[in-house]
Length: 81
Image (cartoon, rainbow, N blue to C red; front, top):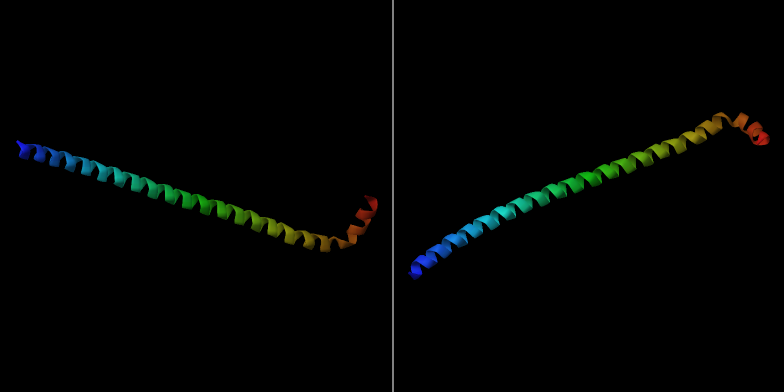
């Protein structure tokens, strides 16, 4: 009788072990996907910020060029304001 209880316990233990392994695999897969999504999100934000900074840098560089081209008209505008 004790052997039968041990066999049942072994079967139940194996079942629990299989279930725990499957749950662990599912959780690890979900965590990997979340990690990948976080990394992609951070890359996207970094690219967005870099593009905005680059666009702002281009605008800053273009303003002096426009000012130098219109330097002859700058004085009359200042006097009329």
